[in-house]
Figure 1: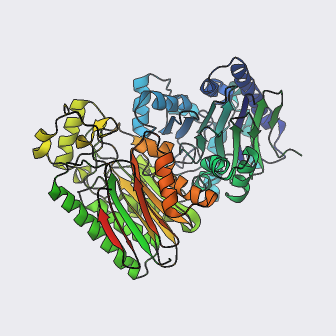
Figure 2: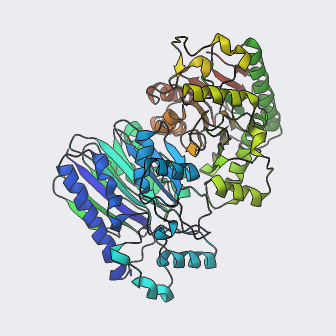
Figure 3: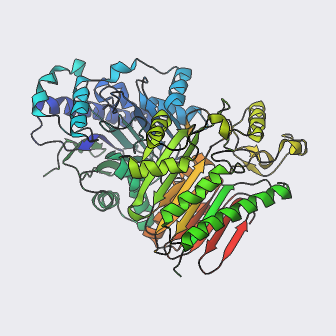
Length: 314
Length: 326
């Protein structure tokens, strides 16, 4: 028993040769956000407060989101409270600085669960959340990723590395902003309250209007009284396999442990190279399986265990 | 056991005072759609084609809340959504925020078959529709006088409501002031009538499929997305079964209703009817909803925890039933 928290910064083909200057800012961001989360949990704050990690500019799925085929950003996010099963989701955001906060407002301030596109943007203005012109979110690295994807005529997960020749634009890392795509956080407090949140820019070169797994309750995000889950990877595969819901369903209906339920979902239900997830259980366990080359991740439990990692451990 | 089976629905949560002629109209439409599906199944059309065919018919007829006859947003416009899932390989397609595509379920099918994605929405979906050359009409095509009247009432009451099928002439008999023990989404049942449509099929080869389509909630915020396009919530199909749900969208999403029917069959070994009953009883909390389901064994089942659900079902051995009440 006890609290536990896990974060991810996306799963994908993260090459083991990833140079330190691309690795360290992200590891530092994960470590920093982990510490924020741990302090909150130690102070017995409601777990959903812990979700507001987008306030840290290093861990903002917003700026640094990958681009649609039109070169624009369309961000989406989702939040769910395990106790009440209340949830909020948003899609198609173009100017909202913190998508997850808007998702939370949908949950708390509307009779609905999910708002998208113009309607979501209008709601953001009504609520007075911070908005900024859409160019703020667009980074050179992602412009290049999009170019590469178009040349190869494919849609890809955010981590597919740019070609070697584009290494020179590494210099565009302003003020420690990281170019992280999907990010997620799950936590359980010392009372067993579970919560999850996920936020993303989606797939590189996605069609305008494409919605992925992140805002779909049961696919990329889910929490109930058994566990809280946040998934990352290829949205279409995660939707089809209802990944987040299945982890909880395996625990509830088949009596599997958190670790086994998560492992089964990642190994048996989604194709290799398409998914990863983080999950915590009501009893304070953590698991972070993935079937991709790597997954930026971090976790901590009350007994003092902490971990920040990218590739499979040992 | 074995053989094909089909079920259709036109929404859960029906006013017990619905005039008899409206009840008959509903039953006739359900029967017609059922027969359409049955002919298709007899000609060996695959399950995923049958569900699309039947839902298209339901969308085109203005009686239920989908396609023409959809509930209106707070702005008086129509924003439709739909999803389809093929149990073989669990391929799926979904669309939201559709304003000018005549048959949203067919657009969802194209997303599944012709795009690299599973879900497209709003202007991106509309753009895709144009590229695919699907039949487009003005948004006005979908708006009916009945629904304009209902939106006005909903605004006066300043509440979200499901669409209302009793024509304006009957309104004086069901004032908001009447204390009714029957409620859905906080509204007296007389003012509530959700009529999302759906179809689930298992074909002669044991392949399951499901499709759902809707205009959503009357007076909903623009941009509001409900359970119908959400795989695992309003629609789901796998090699074991196919499910389509209807009712209070937010409750269906929280309960991941469609996925849960399949999950209790898969992970707890429950049979189809048991799974449907379990999910309706245990997964809805205070929410009101209904669903239809078929299994790869040729069984058909439905369940609902509210007053009435427009539905019809048929199996290859000759069983056929259309109903509204328990």
